[in-house]
Length: 314
Image (cartoon, rainbow, N blue to C red; front, side, top):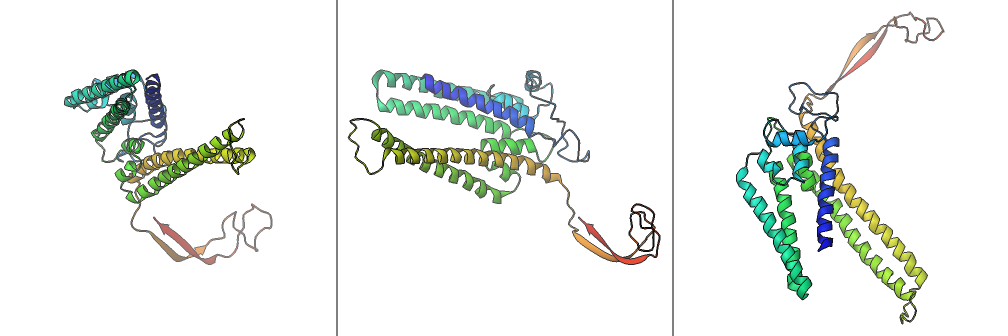
């Protein structure tokens, strides 16, 4: 029971910490400097210097100020239901709190029964109830992000949170559906290799333990030294798979955030190159002409030359 609570608390703490870091790094403004025109849709009131504060969060919840989606999401990871309050969808609060209370309470009840009776059914029901509570918690965060409204057609913060909650959803929000199978393929492949390497690691770990234990009766063809070598190899590959999975997950979050900003990056359809004749004047102190002084940097005068001028329009 204590282990289950510890896992839940750890997950909540990591999610809150990550949402704080992602809010600081993935903002609705690229940098302190404004690279957009005032009329651009993503020119939001945001800055890297603005961090999450309780004052900002609770003023937003009280509808006294506009709350950024990053701040709202960060607060809602701890104060469950805050997004529904900010979105003025109060009718959802009994569903959220009632559902979480019921599933967590039943999970605790079945877990206690399992400890008393050892019944496998009670253990399975406890897992299902806690899993249902986790799903409801995730659905509450997703619902709040989905119903967040702002007077801009495209929000990088929303794309980022979508990708945090559902890998690939931020790409779908940006209209880049072709990226979804790439990132899912990377994560599924990483998980596959993690599972495979973990299985082999356990296998050779078991063999090594048997081979190094007296009176174990082990008479396999694999020696203790070989088992130790393969155990360490597959453990390292297992760890690499974890790093690859986390890297793929973070990469799709960064991708969703960056390309959400580029939605307003104006590129003209007139992509062309123009080549035209021109006269190259030698009345230029950096021009090279054999008829002028030999010293570099001195003015050089000579006869004008014909040349070509290349212009790009994009």
